[in-house]
Image (cartoon, rainbow, N blue to C red; front, top):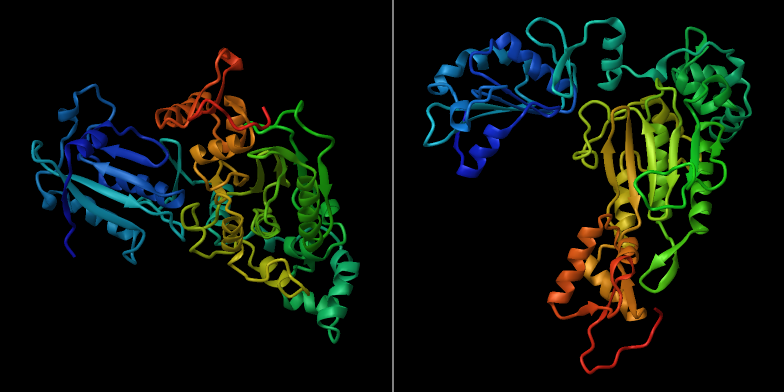
Length: 470
């Protein structure tokens, strides 16, 4: 199938020529060797995907028009394209197109690379990984083992743990499970069939599921910490931390149940400023349950860190160790399915009233529950070594509607109070909302108040204002 040639606009050509190298983007001159080009493609595929433009002079003070030095025509790029075919033998995971612009000579090759399910090696036989603007070789056994785990080709859950078999064969957790689910089986025999014992040692998944206190055997890998910060700011501090963080311990099932319970109990005690004054904060229990369950079951157990649940005045953050596995990204996570810890997910689903009842649908359930309460969707962010899900207590109503609803119950509103009820963080952005409402003749500044004390009130149509709280 021929590669399409796309004619771009004036605005688009300015964007392309202003691109600089970064984690998701790279530009290369057309003289680059296909073998070297394959390293950048491998790096994008093995990391988070990205875009690469071939035919643009990089790292140069040349004016924009002179940076565009494309191929004479699409046939002129055949060597580069043929050199990359071996990287995508199934014809999936990439997209080629040529960009043309009437005022410039030649065409620029655009390569869009998706995050790959498997490890993609460059032409030199090595896989590469994208870190910032660099394509780094994965050239040590340890680095390759990490990449394989990140791709989901191997899982740390299957690693044997240097502890006695009795820790999972004679534990209260496994005995209760066997009696309730498979009374005709012996614990050790059943655990071996489920591949939770390897080399006569319990695996990480086995310990996590059935040890009575996995945290003593795998410290900092199997617990959850719950924090309460009395602030709505970006970061929690020691000064805003309320009390001592709660450490949740036990087998995976108990950890999930207790973490959800502790989180909900903490939230039930929070009151924040709303449109009608102080209001209790409400989050759907389904959302808290599914997000915390997802964090415990799909975390990377090779990383020595707990799952962290941080409860702020205006949001709940759940941070799970490890980046998203395989081809999963924040954009496709609700449509795609991949279990980093397949054994853990499969076996815990056998328990009575399992936390993952609808396997693979947990986050979808979390999003739907937020919609039912007219709250904004959770936000999923991938950090350097973890995945952070923010469950925000922000209404779907526009900031303008929220301000006017507040003024139905209160005489005046300040910039600070407005930011608290709308979720807007910038004073200037909040001021812009006020100015829009003023221009629509809906509100006016409160006379005699300025600077930090300035406030707004509903514009009176007849000289009289509705009484209320101030």
